Length: 250
Image (cartoon, rainbow, N blue to C red; front, side, top):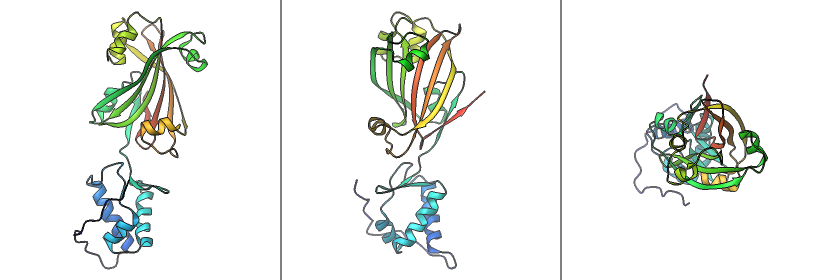
């Protein structure tokens, strides 16, 4: 992506006596970021463009950027440039964790894209999570979750194939998970187990979640049960660390 072009007429930038130039530049950029321009996740102009804008050398400009990076306002990616830090959405993990409710709580619009919906044979990890035999038939729903069109989750949901008639058809018709489970008689379900770790993204995950390969993902494994304690879903979720923070509620 080319650098943004420096405008021909730059806004006035009054310098202050007695304050280091790099600190003044950092404060100016800090104020602009706080105003929302540039937006979270956006790439800043290159060091050359910014140095030209402020009339300083690149060493002075770099000190200002390093200050902003230390404050967590930007992230510097070697070879790619500097980016405004993403807004962090706190995902509260409780007994009833629902994607749409989480996103709306942050005044964002939830949406999603189905990547896969098919019947597959349960691998060992999935079989353990669902309490079934390896190789047993399960329904796999893989979704990319978005908040205001920005990827915040990549999830794989596994359901026992015999959980209830019509589950696959309901999901295929576009129903959400809660709605689909309610359609087969499971009016409510809750989170029984959540395990969280971290790992580097695969090339496919990096593209889908729009994160660099050098940034780890939060990887969560969860088990949901119905009112009787029967396992109804096993899930594997991946969250981009620049955008999502998991918070565990009692």
